[in-house]
Amino acid sequence: MPLICFASPKGGVGKTTLCANIATLLQRHGHRVLAIDFDPQNALRLHLGVPLDYEPGFVSGLAQGTDWRETMVETAGGVLLLPYGAADMRAALGVTQALDQSPALLAAPLQEMLADPTLVVLADLPPGPSTALHILAGMAQTVLVVLLADAASAALLPRLAAGEYFGRGTVAALRNARVQVVLNQVEAEDPLSAAVLGCADQALGIRLIGAVARDRRVPRALAERQPLAALAGEEAETSPALEDMRVLAAALLASLPAPRPQGAAEAGQRFQVVS
Ligand SMILES: Nc1ncnc2c1ncn2[C@@H]1O[C@H](COP(=O)(O)OP(=O)(O)O)[C@@H](O)[C@H]1O
Ligand SMILES: [Mg+2]
Image (cartoon, rainbow, N blue to C red; front, side, top):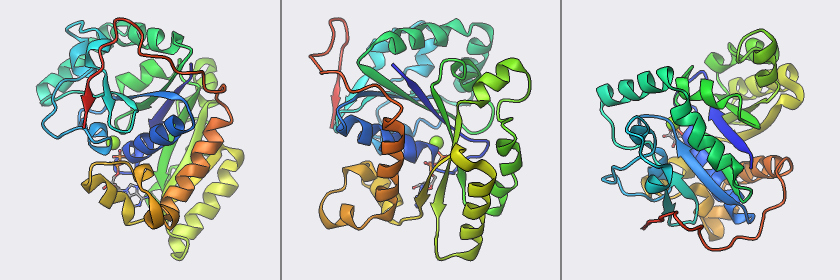
């Protein structure tokens, strides 16, 4: 099943926030969703209700050959998660080095996950170029590049509009064709924000797959360790960011196969419910 990567040349733009929320929304549409955290910040788990002191992880276990099923957790909302794992700087650099030397450490388990016809796999990447993105790019159905509606992001638009996110050449062209852009933290009332959105629309055309409003409920949801998409009642109905995320999820759903009926977890998969 498909792999959707959340990437960006920049940090702090909302990759992790969008990954957690789109995972939750796709899951609510009936898909079985596996979200993988490739950022040593190990923060994706916090958006999905996994406690701060939960340390096991998929990426940090790769170099030791830990089976990915052992580190998969079922989060409170039902999204399956492979956390990065607790790792200090030396350990994170060790993981990068191990993947540089042996890309199959990551490529092999990913191939297994993608061979599961019931799974949609979402990957939350660290900012900028990374070994993980380099390995995943060839397997991805979509690479969602997240930017902000600000001047620094606007400066990156020409390269994206030229279709050169992964560089030039025949292989990069294949990968560039899978790039779509989301502008996050858009403030319709702010002239600069609106101008950047307008520029992105003109420069990117259909590559601009969505825009998400700046909304105080987003950081508040993180403080409560749940995705915005878990909001209910009036809060959910009045959240412009949640509305935009639903529109983005619908655009992504259109390119996914229909959800398959979900049976019990396959034998050998050990789930751990984290509340
Ligand atoms: N639409 C939004 N409105 C308001 N705050 C947001 C929005 N999207 C993300 N944020 C906040 O921006 C910060 C960075 O988001 P994060 O998802 O961690 O970015 P990244 O993964 O790209 O580093 C977080 O504090 C998050 O709560
Ligand atoms: Mg992040």
